[in-house]
Amino acid sequence: MMDDQDRIRRIARQHVRTDELLGVSFMPVAGRQEDAVPTPVSQPVMVSSPPVPSPRPLPRSSSSELSAAAKRPSGPAPSGPLSRQQKLDILAAMNADEVVSCTKCDLCRTRIQTVFGEGDPDTPLLFVGEGPGQTEDEQGRPFVGRAGELLNKMIVAMGLGREQVYIANVVKCRPPNNRPPTPVEVDACSGYLLRQIATLRPKVIVTLGGPATKLLLSTSQGITTIRGTWHQFNGLQPEGPIIPVMPTFHPAYLLRAYTEDNRRKVWSDLQKVMQKIKGESETK
Ligand code: SF4
Image 1 (cartoon, rainbow, N blue to C red):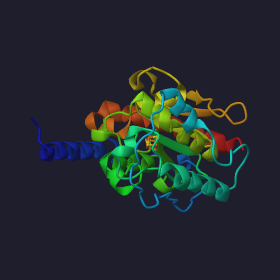
Image 2 (image 1 turned 135 degrees about the vertical axis):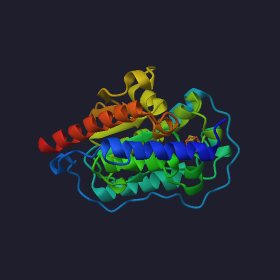
Image 3 (image 1 turned 90 degrees about the vertical axis):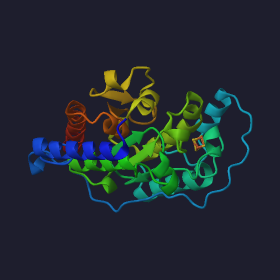
């Protein structure tokens, strides 16, 4: 069986091979400077978790009760354009007043801390992953482990910085042993993500992997089938906009299946995203 050292050496060799093939450590940066996505540079905004309360016993609730509770707006409902400060206030209040002490599903029992999400509230680009892993659980920030390092490279390859996008997950607490969240857990937690989207109103959402894609597109299609083509998130209708969604592979999957073919597929997906954002800003 291949040990960790061998696996790390193999991945390092593949990174070097990618460098040789494509010019950067993840994928080729857009060939011309003018291809870079025109995004205002903003200070990074970290919505960090306040001190962690001890998990409390869960009340017995049915799935539908959990769903209704999670999706019920409890703060100011964003219904129109919001200023940067209004977005920051809404997100910070949601995190401090609801998420850090949330006990709506069993994941509260095993988490170290919740992982709300972070980034530029005025970003045109939202990445949505599945849930926190071990490093994220320890640090309270999304995508800071090995998959996060790869996501950072993907963002840089798009001509952006991590501080220029927003990153969130479907569930805000780590599923034990990094298993996928169960439908009950997704149902319980999804209201927070939907309210984050309603507040941020990004121009484009990139779903990373199956759970995020299935939730936002209400589809049962697998990520291998659905990735690489444009879809629509209609969850803010009728008041809010329809948001284009590009599903692609989760960076953790890419690390497990770090083939040139998979990297080319992800890079192709991200190039479509860059073009979409560029087109959106040119039509203004
Ligand atoms: S995963 Fe979401 S719904 Fe479950 S306890 Fe954590 S914050 Fe609450």
